[in-house]
Image (tube, rainbow, N blue to C red; front, side):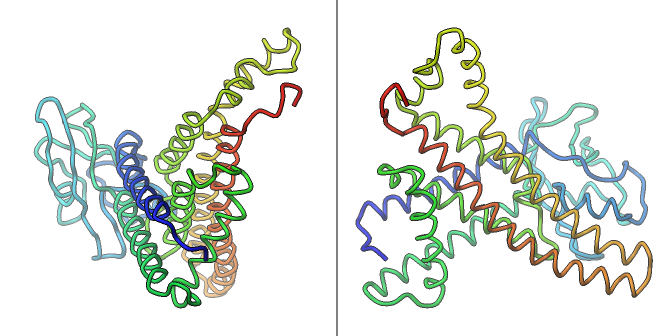
Length: 348
């Protein structure tokens, strides 16, 4: 690996700052984008297949692992009437796990109301917990690799460093540098953070009992918004010229091209958001549906067949986890590269 100048350490710290900023923004977006989930208040019944699947792919104010193993998460709500209020989500359930009101608050389809008025919900939900776990694991791994690199300077990498270092070089040399060009170092911290954040989130989501972090639209929207802002803030005169006044195009066609180019500014990050959300969520639904076949048919033959399919689909999901991180980083690099590309003449 190349010798690390001081500027590389600054870029590493910048990447960590972007990670924490994404973590905070994801929590804020999550407050405005809570998903629907749960049975009607006061109704207690054994969950069916659809309820189990929805519970996994959607967000929740509690984290259910198994019967008797439920982690009740902090509820943080704000209303103009009461201000900030903090309590445990355990108060929304009685001893029979029926929904109940607490201090005037009620939980309905994973949304919290004060009476009939929706509240501003900043709760530490299951996906927010997954954000913290993902960020903590990411910081631990990358800091460990950074320390190992400094400790083994000039020596062959070993241990965790030997596994992570080739991935870092792959992202830098095969994704970021070819698509952005000479200015790639300026954006490398964000793109490395983006790649590992999505990769770790995808892999953690495949563990039993985990949350569907990167399959949550609020999280993918946060990542897409960062890409949108960085791309357009970095855009030079040549970038905006091709959008607002495309050179080499007859004037009548510019009237048609202009709205198309402006719409394209927003559809690019939108496609990133939907692609990651749909791919990860669909994979989880397929896996859970195959597992549920055993309980639907109550047959060991179906169970064996289902287990075989789940094994192969899980291997495919491991591949998809890496591919989605690669694709998101690749297209982000491409969009940034187009924004910072210098003019090669109006005829091109």
